[in-house]
Image 1 (cartoon, rainbow, N blue to C red):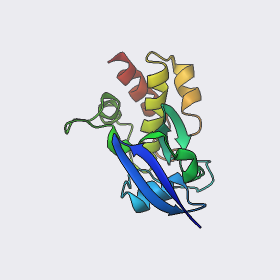
Image 2 (image 1 turned 60 degrees about the horizontal axis):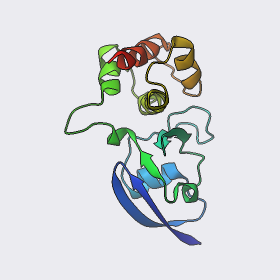
Image 3 (image 1 turned 30 degrees about the vertical axis):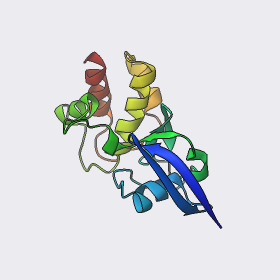
Image 4 (image 1 turned 90 degrees about the vertical axis):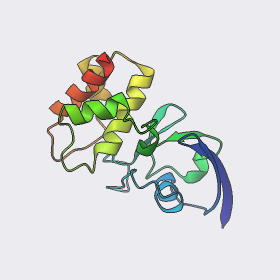
Length: 153
């Protein structure tokens, strides 16, 4: 069965027909071509699929796309403005918080949602906000430092 979904993604209105049961990640990647949203586990366990929906971090690999109807979604592609990286993205680069890069979009989006809610988080708040994001490469310290650096800016 198909349903029509309307939502705003990265500032642009979208209306699309999708099969019932598709996830937001499926639609973002396969219908809208926004492949920055990664799907690692497909169970909501790794955080690589994190996007921001109405200001909150959500796991798009387990979110039925119907739940995004009427919502505003921001993906990693929507953070940069006028060919300039978001300060958080710049901090991830400057602090060496990116290695293989697979988890990075989800990490950045979780951190961005935190900074939207709390522009000056302490380390414990950062660690709590990032707890649902797994990384096999960095050991997390550089990621925490990048979020702190961005918060200072």
